Length: 324
Image 1 (spheres, rainbow, N blue to C red):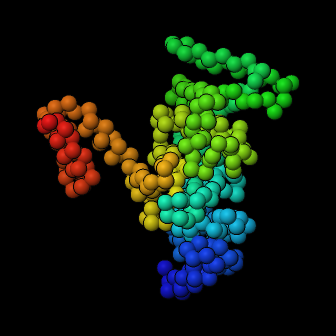
Image 2 (image 1 turned 90 degrees about the horizontal axis):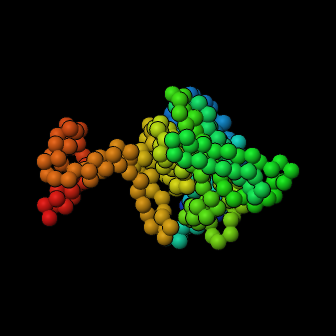
Image 3 (image 1 turned 30 degrees about the vertical axis):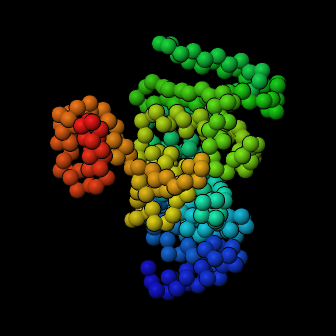
């Protein structure tokens, strides 16, 4: 990055009417603040793409949304980078940048959130899926679910009943390219439980949950189903960063390091999401019921794990548990 680009970015930061945000910045100043990340955006974009177009779309969204401009500029830039990495567009409503107030730090931050169409696009892009969809079930529809060895769903919508009827259930279905399928069914209580976990949601639906409620129901069901489905690295990154606040430091050489993604839990406390390999190692360690099994498991990856403090800590903790 040239000194000129860095200097313009620093000047833009100082020009903000509220320190640490993009509030009050003009179009050229927002562009200057995003310019240092053009290479990162270019590296992140799947199958090529135009980083300048991404930046232009981001500038438009920021300058036309005062609430977003009031968020920390690091969290806004993180949303832009994450959208680039996943190949989804806020302009096409495949994702949203949601402003929320983080009471722990006393600042507004931008939260990256996938839409139903964005998650649908990612699932279809994986190469593992032949078909994937979700549907809401409204009062008056014929709806039957069967589990067991002959599982399936029967859904006959009441087309004459109108779209204003209350939603009662939602389901998501995946058909795999190798054959076979999976589905998940959720009722209103399950959807509400998940909605209220969002930091931006209160008693009544607000924001995208109010404006796009059917789509958010479908996204919630599909997201739940993808947690148990075979995931590509891209899909895992999408699920990890959904409803998270990410910062530019998370992105290096266009590669998302999942273990560095920090977000806030229901109480606003900072949480670090583990990398997928660390989760697998932790689960394997917990499955070791004696010291011999633990040592045998360690030998499987000793060449790779011996230099990793995070893995060593997991094994050390398990040894302490087995010795008690």
